[in-house]
Image 1 (cartoon, rainbow, N blue to C red):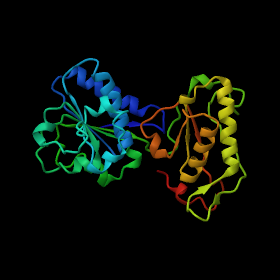
Image 2 (spheres, rainbow, N blue to C red):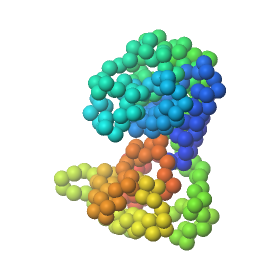
Image 3 (cartoon, helix red, strand yellow):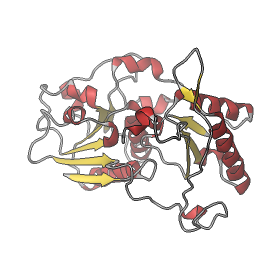
Image 4 (cartoon, helix red, strand yellow):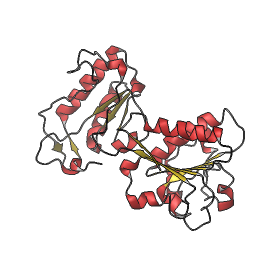
Length: 291
């Protein structure tokens, strides 16, 4: 078993993708299963692999298996090329048979989907199993990717955040930036005494003072020459990131990605701005969960 550890956006998924490509290229007999907790994480790996593989082979070597309920979330106009490598390529859902799966060298799916094939005869098919984004995965979920498939000959590779305080990776581009408390460490903790609020028509929290601080940093970064696509804004509260997204749209900053931590699984950004909304030490709700 091999383990890859790192915090959000530092490059674990790039390491996973490169590892898969090295195995695929150097071992013609290798068959690789990639399993993740979320569809977002699975597609991050799948798209990168597909982009590379379509330039080196015309053979259908990669298969991404979707569940039937995920079909309505796919934009087929945008994902046309990638969809060719999935079980949704004909715009209708069909679970591939075991014999079909065995014809592919790289198979990607969520833990839930892999679990459907536990007793279907894939035990001797794969040589490597990659389980990505383990910080979001419970042990029973992860076992879906192994049970009925693993043998002593199969190599299992785990990737994810083991602890919230795992070693940080430096972004050299911002070393020495005047706004950094420590010019050698591109990390800022900005204290905010704002209050978390909740509207009567919804349970989600938001913090207007934090939103103003986020917008301030965005303006500073853009003036510094940072591209919109290099910035990600993450918040655990839907109301908070919805308001920030609305503010960005009004400012015509449509290429800055905003969302929950789950949205950023498997993605990498040179700049991440995290808005926690709650900042007291007494009642932080589910933020107390290390995952």
